[in-house]
Amino acid sequence: MANLQRFSSVMIVLSIVVLLLSGCQLMTKHDNSSTSYGEYYLTLQQLDQQQLTDEISKQKKALEKPTKKNSQMHYHEAQIKLLLLYSLPTSPIYNALNAKVLLNELNSEDNNAAFANISPSEQAFISLLRDQLNQYLLMRSRLLAQQQELQQSQRQQAIKQQETLIEQVKLLEQTIKQLKNIEQAIDKRD
Image (cartoon, rainbow, N blue to C red; front, side, top):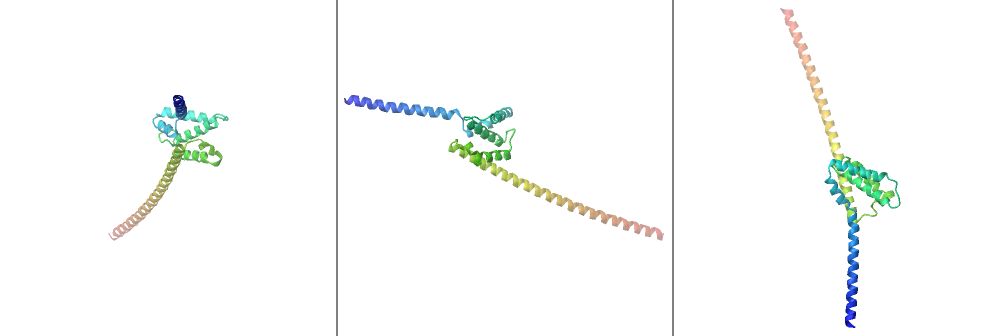
């Protein structure tokens, strides 16, 4: 009887362990089926221009397909991947402003479903991307403002130099006129 209880206890524990292990295996298979956006971005960094162009086409085609019940998640995934392609400096479509606009659209209240099914680490990655894009755009606008100030300063300096040269030319013309008058006066005396 004691052996039977021990045997049934061992069988129960063994069954629980098998169930737990098979559950872990199912979760692992599910997680590996789709790569994270961080992994996707790292993969994009290693692609050449032709491969990037192909990936851009693939994601744009995924956006053009009509949405079905189950494909809404795939549509949002394609939007996020396109966002990452806009954010990648080596991408043929690199444009931080377009990336920020797309990110804002994805973040809007109407379209909040885009980030509803992603993990907290993926949300952190997207948040980091948003911060980087904001920082880049801020630095870019500051740089453009500085360039405009520099150009304005250079224009003003050129105008001042031109005015100085015009004054010098006038002085030289007056000096030449005076010298001609002196020459004429000398010629009249002789």
